[in-house]
Amino acid sequence: MAINDISLTSAMRSNLVSLQGTVDLLSRTQNRLSTGKKVNSALDNPLNYFTALALNSRANDLAGYKDAMSEAVQTIKAANNGISSISALISQAKAVAASAKASGSGTGNVTASINVGTLSAGDTITIGGTTYTAVAGTANTTTQFAIGSNAQQTAFNLAQLINSATETCDFVVTAVNGTSLSVGKSVAADVVAGDITFPGTQTSMSSSLVSANTDRGNYAQQYNTIMAQLDLVAADSGYKGVNFLAGNSLDVQFGPGATDKITIDTNSGSFDASAAGLTMNVTATSSWATNTNIDTDTAKMDTALNTLKAQASKLSSSLSVINVRQDWVTSMTNTLTEGADKLTLADMNEEGANMLMLQTRNSLGTTALSLSSQAAQSVLRLFG
Image (cartoon, rainbow, N blue to C red; front, side, top):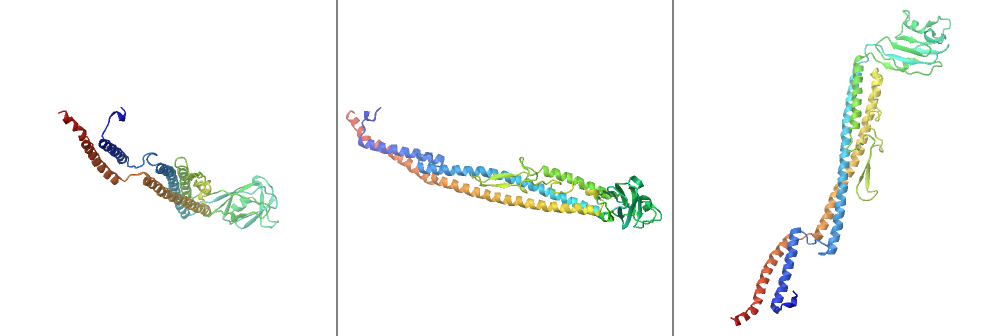
């Protein structure tokens, strides 16, 4: 039905238009109260709507980077837990080494198997301060040596000489041939490199010392067990496939830019926290037969502890950077969200007051429309 099909009085049409405007305002206010926003679409306010949309979009992007930062923090914590456990194991191994050293060098002989190369007539070997000269033979146990440089002295087989009743010497030769010697001390002391020298043409010497001290052997085995456990801890200190103690690295993105990130690694991504990676001996040197062996391994453990401290410091520095960026993201997200809200959120107190006023206006408009219709209704009385 067209509007012009029905004729309304001027007063009624005026009141009707006013009432329709009030209803529109009521509908808008109800929408604002239900959504909490005064700008719900571009039709409400294009500038505020699209500005708020951009601000909220950036806030959401930053929140996504924050999740990645939280995962990186957990990865660093896993590595730090590993470093703490490995440091504790090394400290335990050092205590075992100290106990081994305090147990003494043992009551048995410490033997050195020494590779001397090929012996020829005229070659000399000094053992315990006494020089022996090869005077004849080059093969097996028939090699002959003489004491000192007295060429007229009767040649003796070296093993027979040192073991003879007439020769007083702390050293005992258990085997001798053209290429090697097995030399030990007949007293409870260690054979060290300075005890045996080659003033002549023999320059090659390597030794494998084995202590007869049962306690030291047991302590050495304890050390070996600790090193095996250390390797397991290092291998298990990863988080979601990233292990900073096994040479892994991780890029943590702070923003959309290619350079807006930090790379977390240890020793340029090549750090290895296993016993071998920390340059410690996986097994105790020569079963800790000598104090020198123990001191060598202890020094390596001290170096490993310093290395772990340095790597922990690097991880701590990276963690500090991530924490700062996390705080920044939180603050920036709040700022962006607050800015968007100021452009779009409605004042609920104001809208509530508007609703009450519009309801009153609506009631008054309805009453006014009823009153304006009374003039037309008076015509009915003429037909009464």
